[in-house]
Structure formats: structure tokens, C-alpha cells
Image (cartoon, rainbow over the protein chains, first blue to last red):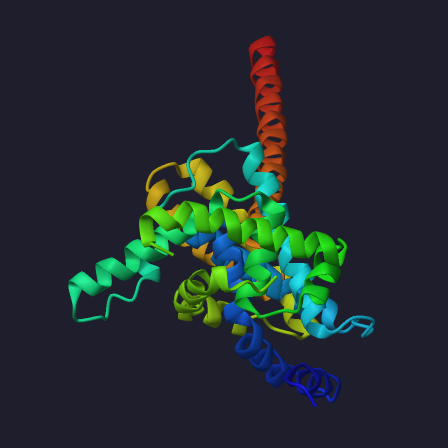
Length: 184
Length: 124
């Protein structure tokens, strides 16, 4: 029995609070990371994560189990991210680059190492922003919840071949961007 | 497609995963699941919607109050399972209706007073 199955049966048995905690534990981090890499904005990622969970709670009672719980959750994440990006485009780009010291581990006693980590994080995130939306989504889904390509295809509503090509092209482009900077 | 060419890239990504910020976790955990709480939330929302009107009328201390209001709206929004944008919109709508009602009442009051003055003037 998978974690998702346990969460679902717990929800159906009436233990809503337990199911909620289970969902946050197993998917919260991935949802937040996907949102953060899709939007490159810490505050927006927090709001998107919140909205995703609101939709999950509202929809969980109607969840029929036609797809896996993970697929359903990440499809919601994808939709909320795309909605946000659409709204953002309307407001015209006011620069996505932000200083996000908060997400960096500042508890590290070595300031040089801490700065290096922050610099790497920002460089990778900026590089991801240069990818087209579909490649960005496919790559974040595969990296942050280790989803199978088949599941990503269902979430993104595209063919398996498209997912493979999106991930391959995205990684290739990322490598080209990051090679001279990080030496990958 | 899991090419060895991307091994280093994969390693970098595995190292830069962020933790869910505790404040967001707390915000999500505080989403209530009962319908009664949602109804109570809506009722509170109606009451709260009077506040922007009052703030608008007083103007002073607006910046101080608005931050508190935003936090309040976030809490209300969470309690009735809507996002902050929607709760701001609902409050703005309610505030708009409230202000419109105030204008109608003010207009009615002024008209009555004008009629009274006119009556007094004519009777003198």
C-alpha cells in the first residue's frame, strides 16, 4: 500500500486532519519546489502552494481515483502555476529576478559556503527561467517528485514522446547555459 | 533519455531542493475542513467588510491599518477556503456596496435638509 493509498483511506475513514498532514508531508515540499522553479518568486510560490492545497482539500471528496493521487495533485499544481504565469504576463514583466536570502540556508556557519550555495541556487533558478514553459514544467516535475515520464505526460496532457523531448531539450539547454558558469 | 551527460546537472538539482517554509506549512495546516467554520468565516467576512469603508472614511493611519487588514483577510480567506485575491475582491465589493449605500443615505439626508431649509425660507 503506497503513502497516497494510506492518505486516501485515512481521508475516507474520516480522519481528515491526518490525511491533511500526510498530504503536506508527502507532497508539500515537491509542490513548493515546482512552484518556485516555475515562477522564480518566493512569495508567489508560497501563494501557489497554498492555493494548490486549497484545491486539493476542496476536490478530495470528489476524487474518483481515475488517475493516481500524485498525478491528480501535480496536475492541479501545473494548472495553478500556469494560471499564475498567465496573470503575470498580463501585468507585463516587471523583472522576475528577486533576492531571496530567506530560502538560503543562512544557519551555515561558513559565510563563504553559504554565499556559494545561494549563488548556485540563484544561477540554476535563473537558468531554468530561460526555458520555455513546457520544458520548465516537465523538468521540474521530473526533478522534484521523481515522477515517471508516463505520469508527467498525463499531468501535462501531452504524449510520452513530447515529454521525453521536452526533458531532453530542456536539460541540453540547461547544460549549455550552466556549463560555462558551474562547469556541469 | 537519462543520459550520463546530464549526471552532474541531476546532482545539482538534487542538492538544491528547498524545504517547505514553516509559515506556509502552518498556513496550510490551518485550513479548516468543516462547513460550519466556512459559514462562520463568511459571516465574519461580511462584518470585516465594513472595516475598509471606515478606514476609507477616516483616511488617517491607513498604512498602519492596511497591513493588519491584509493579515486578517489572509486568515479569513484561509478559513473559508478561498485565496487572498478572492477575499480582497469580496471585501472590495462589499466595501463598494457599503460606500454606495452611505452615499445614497447621505444624498437622502441632504435632500431632506434642503427641503426643510426651503420650507423654512418660504414660510418666513
